[in-house]
Image (cartoon, rainbow, N blue to C red; front, side):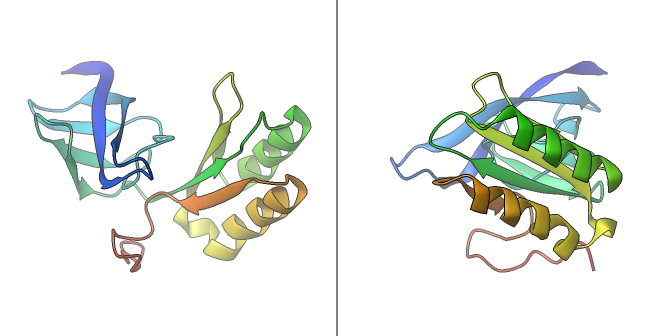
Length: 153
């Protein structure tokens, strides 16, 4: 049906009580089904390559996983170019991508699950250790109760 953006709403409230929402690049497959083109940076639950059913209110359900793990890196200030470029290089070797907005306040890692969780975690943990105040989390590995989703098994 076409390329565009779909507004996704997270099912978990942010610390201020709001639901995270963001327009995400996606290809429309049918009236309510979308193929996610780029991993969301704020909304959890999906990654590039996933097919999702999106309700009118923006909440969504993944109907087919594309095989990519999403990781989000957040910083209280702008992340350094050299560190971001280093992450890009590491994840490119694993078949993944690292993207960030112009503010560099966060970065989004998308990497095939076949790379393995340790291969994903080690460079991110090293990056976070070198950037005081920076934190990270998986975007599509755990459910709302922090239990592994297990879609990669």
